[in-house]
Length: 148
Length: 148
Image 1 (cartoon, rainbow over the protein chains, first blue to last red):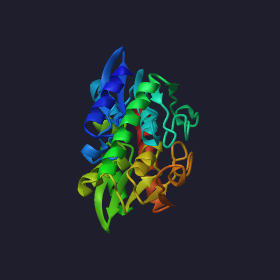
Image 2 (tube, one colour; image 1 turned 180 degrees about the vertical axis):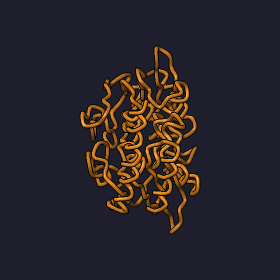
Image 3 (spheres, one colour; image 1 turned 135 degrees about the vertical axis):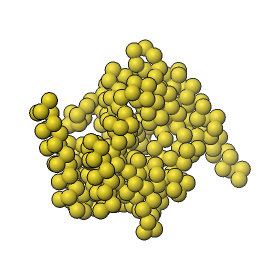
Image 4 (cartoon, one colour; image 1 turned 30 degrees about the vertical axis):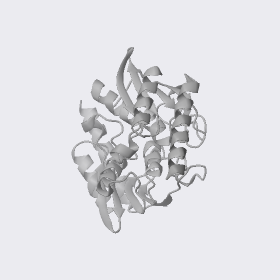
């Protein structure tokens, strides 16, 4: 999760909502990503998606069997769906997202037995740091808005 | 939807599950996509995602305001989430996907008032053609499997 926080920090520095993710296979990080929605002008460019695409490239497969993803904030519907579609084994996340989270908050899609793949979930890893960087970001954003 | 079916046909020809999508803005198609999961080795590469990314490029924005998506088969969780995240106005789809559909079949996420964007839904457009190309594809796939 520390590596995912480093990714979140990269997003923070360039003014993107600071969420980061890494994918681990066989003890090694094979995919890293941070939110790039504004820079790429692409609503798909969430941290998890960027990390999944890099990991797929590393393994030369769309099936990320035996891979785990570490992400600082609870994945949204799109990213939870991407995690299922990619056959990721386990998700470790930091803090919940009560407005859009699809793992625990609004939906619990990763354990849905009607889908063709289920994913293990562990939450609360470095939760304080993961939520603090978000709070710092939105506080700064509000300050900037007030100035303008 | 005819243009989305042309996209599905492109997927069929190269051996991908034949699903196609187009995005329309102001009466013009600004994004096209077909499933490329196997060719790109990328579980994210569904038809809707490819179309959304092309449309974001065309409008130079991650917000696809006043854009509509036409897709041959009911979107999955990932694609439904991507449609919400991209602020697409309306979804028109052909046939339901009872195993993975997140618009009507397993979930109805596009109308969820807890999320920060809702999407209009119309189903059943050229439904027979949209499901027939899928049936043809899986029939041929079973035949190939039997031969090996």
